[in-house]
Image (cartoon, rainbow, N blue to C red; front, top):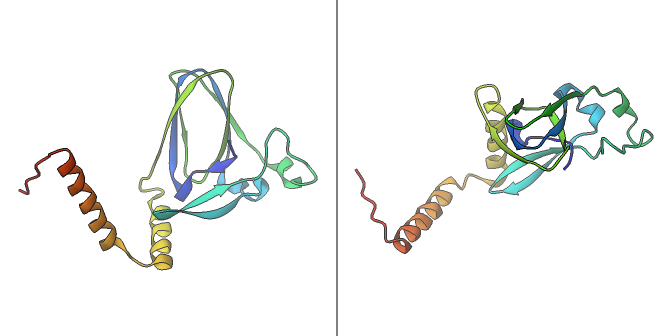
Length: 155
């Protein structure tokens, strides 16, 4: 796993179902010290991937001299606990024992502008093909309905 931020400014909750996991969290103000960078990854609408090349456990002080000044918040999440990672925060985790985690990204009023900005940038770059995408989706749904012999009635 890489030290990263969630795409498009998403918040993240992570629930630990089994085992224990150690988290290292860095606020957005530490981005420069973490040598983070953004890249666009095309998945329908582009997503902004925010990753850092730094390996927290074997980083070279010559290669990443500012890293020594970065301040992390550390949390251990145990079975039955949930951690909330605010949008824009960097995080990295390590399993301390075999286990299972469930996580989900989400948006709200605090970070909706980030995803809206990224969506608008994608539409500007690629053109607005929304109508064609909806038509393709309608066709796919119609094919699924036919395959499953479902009847859909408009109200």
